[in-house]
Length: 277
Image 1 (cartoon, one colour):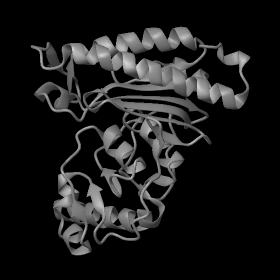
Image 2 (cartoon, rainbow, N blue to C red; image 1 turned 135 degrees about the vertical axis):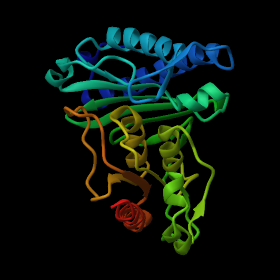
Image 3 (cartoon, rainbow, N blue to C red; image 1 turned 120 degrees about the horizontal axis):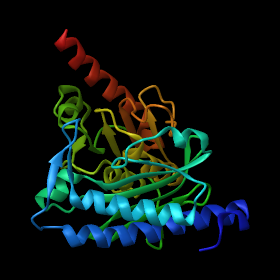
Image 4 (cartoon, rainbow, N blue to C red; image 1 turned 60 degrees about the vertical axis):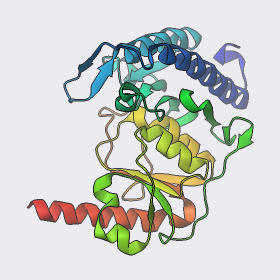
């Protein structure tokens, strides 16, 4: 892999995307070595699960990616955060296993999600689903790809008949039924859920429970490079590598559907908040 400072800006992006793709494949092999075994597991302070597989993948990724790009910062779900990343214009943003609960129970919809973020926005990404052998890759201004196929987000014009993957509390709300959306089975890996929007397999997807940088950064670039939109409910894009890497509710979809999907989420969340007052 060429040194980053020896490349033109476009070649640099391509090299970073290739670096992430290679690392994600190797990380997938490590994770599969733990899959459907008697895993050591424990619970983090936020009540989310973590396993020895998460830690092994995180260790490999940090060592290999940091060796390849020593001047990039680091932000990962499974590495203790430090202030070092604030002094770096460019950082790796990593989720070693997105969908750990699915991984633990032997389901297939978990991913390795990797991104390079520069000045707050993702510029290279790889999201890999090892159990389906699906590699989603993107570089800013260079398109988003599933294998050798360039991806394009769907062009569904409105909510009626749209295939939406989202939280059960949203999908079961009366407004969702009234809109005529087609609820699809829950996809436990948020990065995979969003990658399916980029691939046009889903018309839209959402998350309402404080998604973090590592859940979103890689898939954010996939969606945008596929011609879709991913935003918070205000319609504003997300910024990464900020002091607090947690985001408000988000939605992703093809462009024609996006405003209607945001309005639906806003309505369902407002109703639930009013019910709790």
